[in-house]
Amino acid sequence: MTNRPRASLRRILDDLGSTLLDVAASPGELDAEVTGVHIYDPLDEVFFPEGGLVLAVGVEGAERICALLDEAKTVAGVVVKQPVDVDERVRAKVLETGVALLGLTRAASWAQVAALMRSLLAEGAISDPGESTPDDLFALANAVCALLDAPITIEDRSSRVLAFSGRQDEADPSRVETVLGRQVPEKYRRMLEEGGYFRQLYQSREPILISPGIDVLPRVAIAVRSGDEILGSIWAAVREPLSDQRRVALIDAAKIVALQLLRQRAGADTQRRLKADLLSTVLAGGKEAAEAAGRLGVASERLCVLAAQLSEDTASDAAHREGDRQRFCDALALHVGAIHPKAAAALVGSVAYAILPLHASGEEETRAVRVAQSFLTRVGPRHSGNIGVGRLAANLAEVSRSRTDADRALRVLRSRGETGQVAGYTAVHFESLLLQLGDLVTAEEQSPTGPYQRLLRHDAEHGTGLVATLKAYLDAFGDVNAASAAVHVHPNTFRYRLRRLTEIGGLDLADPDARLAVTLQMRIFEHRN
Image (cartoon, rainbow, N blue to C red; front, side, top):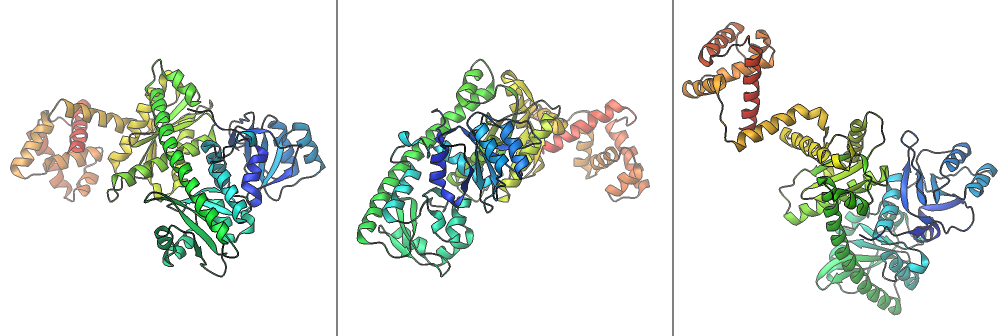
């Protein structure tokens, strides 16, 4: 895997423009390298990596900003929500620490800016000026913006924004909303679909002019193609139709964007496969785990494994399901990466596994469960699934056990028929053991024995319900009134059936071992059936 691409603060600000970020106070030239994006949580373990860009959620006021700058002297920059309270103390502290203070527009959410910056760094879309390549999508968007004199977005077939140029604040509110959310808002997408603009766009090999409404600037759009395959589209917010010279420039740009999208797709597939292989090696433990963890850049101590799986959509085809799984995994990787820079996630088969480093607190599994619950809440019902959480692994040698725990917890949730749920292994330990016993029974082709087998046979031959009577009795802890109500019979009738089943089955209900044995058999074999 290649090293994570690095970007200067100045390059990030130039590419994102004032749509998202402004400089509130600067220590001088903004040439510090950005190594990653990290969310600051004052209630959690404080981690300020060198060169990081810290998103200071909830930090307001000059006094708190100064305190955070004092703590985070090794980072490249600190981002707070606008309006930023900048006074002489803040300016002096910025100069003293050398940490830039940036303001995030109120319209953007922290999740949006974290996802945007992380994806830019991970995709290599931003690099230092001396190292940039002409076919980077963001560089291409800015080049097309200069050629057309209009702000540009490059989008995929689902109207997700892959890259955008500067000057987005010159466009209309719908474009700003699109850039902030990295997705064309549903109301505008529906308007384009109902107007037949998408059909016209994908049928044409020339740029088309779109005038969707009085509150939205006209757009010039062109499909990005590879042969007959539609890869995406380029959209320019314009105030008048393009000249012939600019139309030709846009057509040529679409060919270059197509080449870059194909390269990115091939590279992303290769990197995903390599990352999945490395993470599988870490999860398996063994002597190669340390090398794999080093190549992934993940932590090697105090780790917890999360096993996440989407609910299967039987109505969709295999390719659609695989795409959904990959997007689910990408979202999980982004989520855990925001919590700790040495976390990692990858899709292995149909399960997205994440390795999450945790600091010592005595409640590591509880914290991991909260992280998983927060993730499912964020992705919402569109990506509904379950997550199993393993026990804490003190080192890489114990990661395979944590992975097994997470798999078993996930299986318990599936066996319940639940979705959108999280389970820590210790919370479902007994249910997991029952499933394992069921596996053993199946593998050895075992059948019911003893009193339980005799009662099953009697019910089958005579049409009685002695097994149901016994189950109700055991479930009610021997409370005849509650048990008889559960099966809707008179207590005296229930007592008669109870005597009959003890005689027929040869079961001593006063013996705790006998009760345990028949209870386990009922649980195991009922689950198999």
